[in-house]
Amino acid sequence: MLNAARPTDVPRAAAKAARRRWRIQPYLFLLPSLVFLGTFTYYPVLSSLEMSLYRLSPITHQRQFVGFANYTALAADPVFGRVLKNSAVFLLGSVPITVALALVLALLLVRTHALSAAFRTAFFYPTLLPLVGAAAIWLFVYTPGYGLIDVYLHGLVPASVNYLGDPRYALAAVIALTIWKNAGYYMLFYLAGLQSVPVELYEAGRLEGASAWQQFRTITFPLLAPTTLFVLLIASINAFQSVDQIWVMTGGGPDNATNLLLFYVYQAAFMFFDLSKAATLTVFLLAVLMAIAMLSFGLLERRVHYEV
Amino acid sequence: MTPVVARRVATTCWALGVGALAFIWVFPLLWALATSLRPPGQLGSEIASLWVHHASLANFRDAWGDAPFLRLYYNTAVVVFGILAVQLVTITLAAYAFARLEFAGREWLFRLFLLQLMVAPSSLILPNFVTLKTLGLLNTRLGIMIPYFASAFGTFLLRQAFRGVPRDLEDAAAIDGCSPLQTIWHVFVPLAKPTFVAFSIVSIVYHYNEFLWPLIITDTDRARTVTVGLASFTQSAESGAQWNLVAAGTVIVVLPLLVLFILFQRRFVESFMYSGLKG
Image (tube, each protein chain N blue to C red):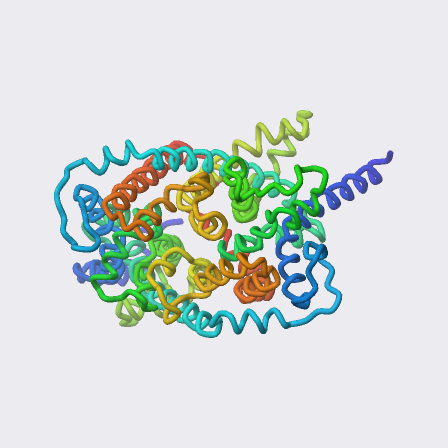
């Protein structure tokens, strides 16, 4: 289409000039957001960094500069070692299984069938439950003797195990709840991703005699790579912020077996009132979250050509 | 086997297999519903079953008496809708600026906004608690709300929607003498309505379910929200193995969102799908 002499050009230029005239206006529009972001996101990041360099007394409010002493103290803290190990186990135990399950559920439920919608609802509804409510119900799932596991898996599992009270099982029990809670949410992203895979690719695959597994491996999975990366990113960030279920189900116990990074921050700050330690832990947590984000942004940018 | 029969068999296997898994998924909720309706005396070995002999609302009456649920609901409603109301203003203005205005430092500021997606407020509980204490906002509903008044997620979502608004409509509004605020209100907001709905649903669900921040900000029932009330209620009832009460309390807290979900299922699912779309 020729557009050299479109009649709208003159008013369009006038409108553009009008847009440019108010140079301060964009900043005014951003101001409300920036005030709140500044106070509750940027400033606290900096103030955590600062607090972590001081010895702070919660009672006398005195502060003494100690350099990196809080960091060396943290490195020597055996509970911190335990917390790091737990967080790693929690991340590696919950994220891959949740994401894989989400993908399988999406593949099973992408077909149009009268029951598909009901099934999707069944897997999705835990997303809407408050984690504390879900954890309250799951307390009963794990109750020794007459809980749901002991009653319904009678004979399949050792009887009367106190899953949440036994350091060998407690973290796995919390991970199971977390998988149940999140799989349906990530399933939605895969369902959306599957809709953007062109049908012609499968037709071509079938013509070449590709089996269902081959089609998945060479068509579906590569094309879903951006979705997978995105889901891995939010699942990992969520894993490092898991705390509600710990509070309700175990309180970090038994013997710190379920103490995770954010719960340890909460404990240090609001139960032990060790503000220096809590600030140092906060800095560490922020560093972990940043590292995850940087890593996945790097990966996402290399994969843009897949986005449909 | 003919292909038709084979397909039928496959479909039946699919329905049975996925159906069994789906049943496991809904079982905890069904159990909570059944247990909350069972009369307080009836426990014993039947407690794990889904069967209810004589349904009764006695547990709800008891739970309702044990915790100030009305007060908790009220606080949650104020918090959830208060956050949403302020967010809608802040994200609309910011999204318009990022989508349509040209200014120095735009890219840089946008990245600064996105920082909030990584540094979720729950990791900043300690410094934000100190700030709230300084501001004198402990034990207030405003204190629970204020860290969420700006939303990078909402700004991002809405910026995408605003970018899709045709320039011609915007220019026409400008020519008609609309100020930028009027243009936003008459052109951008109506056209981005689905995005506003999606963001609102996600925001409501997220803040209704939020636990850690309201927990540390409140130490009395004055400003406490339902999730915090439920957690302490569960702790006392669980220690007495009063599962009927735990179930009733949980049902009271989870029911509002589940009812809304059943009424507006498609909207909810679409909104949460939306929440994952990025540009």
